[in-house]
Length: 428
Image: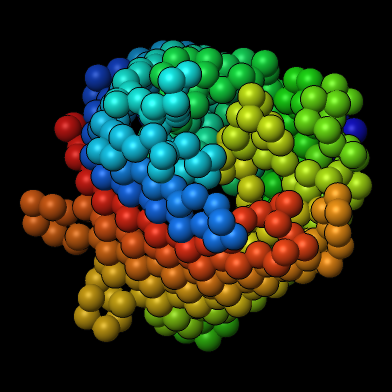
């Protein structure tokens, strides 16, 4: 039903607009528009768990190379995208590795994490006017299929994706992916995904208002729908108020429910964030609500071979209150107070700071109701502005998460530290 609605909306927009685009007409050629980039990443994550759980940490050095060609000239352009990934394990601790939420290096059958990882992928792409079809290994960034690039190496997916931007402000996406490459393991199909179909689009109605609708179907696991509405109210000079609504509805398949012992198949979760920006400051007030009869809450990401995970990408949670905890338990309500500061106004361009306090309650588990959790999040990020190290970034992030005894079946509290140093190099 949602897919039909998306199609009708798209047709209405297409028929109402005469502003046709043609990116292919601007093509400079396969070589002329090509680029080769390398990202050097040093990443460390430490989780000091509470309630008797063993501490976990991983540390690694990665090199992420990406090549993107231009399109050949003509009515239909042809191009190639490719990537090569390598990661070296700098900690190699059997005891401290293996946390699902860190997952830099997957443990083998021996219980030891991998010493290093190496993998590569490529895709061929075709463009007609402003519509592109890509087949092969990709890193999709859609609300219902968003690859995780928040660890040492990124996830990737193998399949077909069509993206159309024929109308100014309108993007339509449709795709089918049949393999998932886990971020912590080698191989093109290391995630256990059978297939996932995605469909949807976004439209910039005005300069201030944008909306999106998407749907996905993970074979033998779940069906998911997503809706977004974002409105920016310009206020005085250098001031604005942004309202951002995001919502998901998921319905689990019966076979998956049996496999993971789920007691219900339905979840609805939504968030509304209000962000007031004035000069270098931003203030966020957010509310998030999870309802439905599924004891899994909102399911996303991870790998089907891991319990309670569905294989649709580790960033497939476009919700306001997602930090260390996602505040996505069954029946959970959560509130956020956030603050951001851009230090460029104070003479330090490239330096930013973000803070958030989130509190969740009303959590239901198989043994209790009324559980709570709370998180204090802090992050400093600095991006070098000039010189030989231009664009090198250093990100220091910490979270303090505390979970009540009633919520212990759902989540585990602790103190988390993340240190990421990224150095992007443009070869050409």
